[in-house]
Length: 313
Image 1 (cartoon, rainbow, N blue to C red):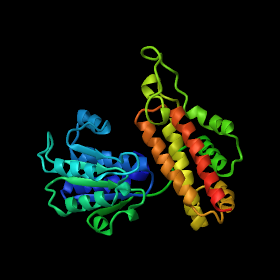
Image 2: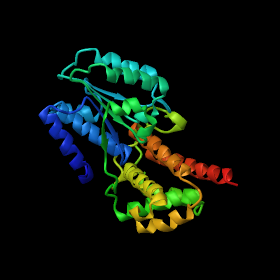
Image 3: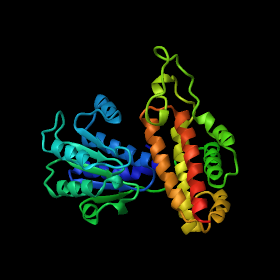
C-alpha cells in the first residue's frame, strides 16, 4: 500500500481498534485498484488476520469475506440477494462478515433497491464496503447510509519511463498520431512473459474475446508489468479530465498541450477510457494474458476516439 493510502488506512484502522467503524463505508477517488487494495487491508485489520488469513483475503478465498463484482457490465439483483442471505448466516471462522462490493456504481435499479433494504436492517457486527468510481450513480438514500471515504488523487508512483509510455498510448489512441503497430511497441515491454509449454495438445485460446489464460505463461513480467502501466494510464486520463476543467490542477506539465487539443471534445471519451481500463485490469487480474488484454485495450480505445470524433462532425 503506497504512502497516499496510509493516512486513510491509519484513520480507519484506528476506528476498527476503537470499535467505532461505521457499518457501511463508501470508497471513491483514486484508482479502482487503490480502492480495492485499501478495502482488503482494512479487511485484514477487521479480521485480525494472521499470515494465513491475510493470504486468503488477498486471494479472495477467506470464508467470511464476500466479494461482489459486476457480471459483465452490471451487478445483478441476484448477487445482492446472495450477499443478504449470507449476512443472515453465522460467520464461518471470524466474529463477523464483511462484504466488499467492487464497482458498486454498476448496480442496476433493482440491485440498489435490494441493497438499500439490507442497509436499513441491523447488520450486527457485519460490515459493507462499497467501492465506486462514480458514487453519484448510487441512490442518495444509499449514500446517506454510508460513511464516505474519499481517497486522495495523485500519482501511482510510476517512474518517468512508465508515465511516458502511458502518455504515448493514450495520446496515440486519442489523436491517431501513431499506428497500432507503434502503440503495440510501447506496451510490449510491460506485457512480456516467457511462454511455458502448453499443457496437452492444441491448447486453445479460451475466455472472453479469445484471451489466453495466464496459466499458459510462466514467470512475472519485469518492472511494473501490465498493471503498473494501467495505473499510469489511469492517472494520465484522470489528469486530462481534471485539467480540462481546472488547468491549474494538472499534475504533469507535459499534459497541457494535450488538454488544449482536447478543447471542445468534452470528457465522454476519457470517461470511456476509464471504463476500458477498469475492464482490462479486471481481465488481467482474472488471469488472461497481459499482451492480449493490452492489445485489445488499445484497439478499443482507438475505436472509442474515432466514434467520438465521428459523432462531432
